Each structure stands twice: as C-alpha cells, then as structure tokens.
Image (spheres, rainbow, N blue to C red):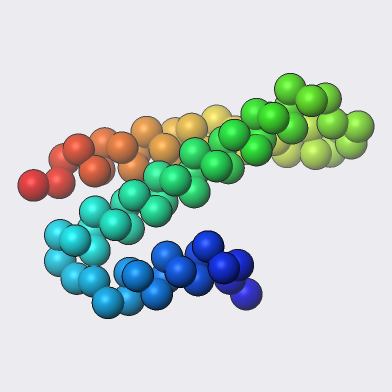
Length: 79
C-alpha cells in the first residue's frame, strides 16, 4: 500500500509519457534515494540500540549511495 506522497507521484507519472515521464520518474527516484540515505545516516549517527538495525543500515547505505549516483548519471545522460 502506497503512502500519500507515493500515491501522488504515481498519479502524476501515470499521465505522463516520453521525456517528461523519464525526467519526472528519475526525479522521484532521486528524491526517494536521498530521503532513504538521510534516514540511514541519521539512524547511524543517533546510535541505534538494536545491533541488527545498525548492521543493516551499515550494509545498506553504500548500496543506496551507489544507486543515487547511477540515477544522477542516468539523468545527466538523457538527451
């Protein structure tokens, strides 16, 4: 089930096509990755009490960062 923010993004994307869709989709993916990275960084900086969550955040954060770079590169490569 989508939250209100993701539902609005989906509804916006559903009526788009072509380059406008591509740009809006990449923008949405970039924003989501930036938010996720910020959440993981905050969790690690605040010192979580759950070692499993700390380990998960530590393992996952590099992947989120890598994906964000890929999204940025894809967006800059679009004609």
